[in-house]
Image 1 (cartoon, rainbow, N blue to C red):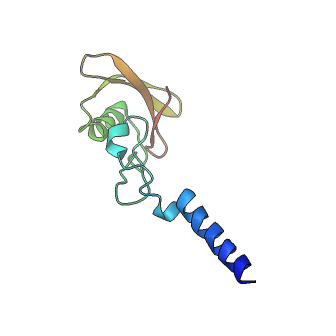
Image 2: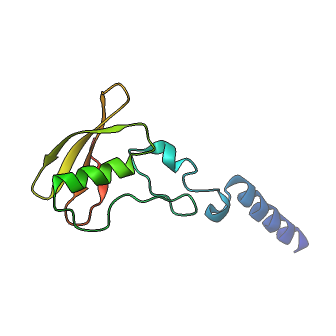
Length: 115
């Protein structure tokens, strides 16, 4: 009986070392800011915003939101086109090359990559 308990405890201990619990696995995305423009949301202390959380009615407003969002990323907002339910914009790197295309939802201001 003692041997069964010892073997069981060893199995449980080995499982914890080989597959640590998710809560102890570290932050979900420790470099959130570095992964722009493909998403900036992280649950936990490093999270950031990813939209205006309000209705967006004009292209000027959408451009301002995108410029605020990408202000620390070293990128620029290029051509912005209004579509039926969203605004579509090119995100340009420092050389002026398109590195991503994003949309800003008109209803809720949410920013998402579509590339």
